[in-house]
Structure formats: C-alpha cells, structure tokens
Image 1: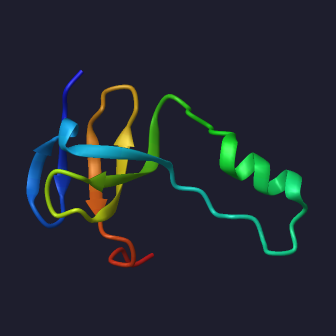
Image 2: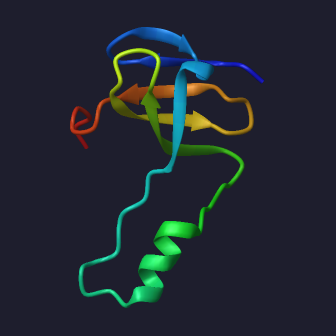
Length: 87
C-alpha cells in the first residue's frame, strides 16, 4: 500500500522514497544489563494504532526524521526533524 509522508524539508512524498528506521524508543540507561539492550534493539511493540517512527528520506534530502503514523490506516499525523519538536 502506498501512502504519502510529509518530509519537513521536501513536502509530501511517496513512502517509496523513504527507508523505515523502526519505532522511536527511549534507550536503556548506560548501566542497564545487556538483556535490556537486547530487548531495545530487537523487540518491537508493532501495535495497531498510533506510533512514532524513524524514517530516512533516501531519495530526497537524505535526512532522518520522525513521523507519527497510524499503522492501521497509514495516515501520517505529523512529521518533524529530530530536535525540532518541543515537548
């Protein structure tokens, strides 16, 4: 299924211009045991619904960005460059 991702630099582009980089997750602390790092690297929630994800615009500006996407409908709710979003 094709859908559009709004690149903060280039505007709306086909998902085929991007490379999926995984879910946005907070990393374990530096003192965490190796098992926590293994879970962080290899376990994914992959839940149906809204999740934050990393995307790389390989055919455009070649920048990493984050997108908040509904995985059921593939609707991208927002996208931004790392560090641009104020919490």
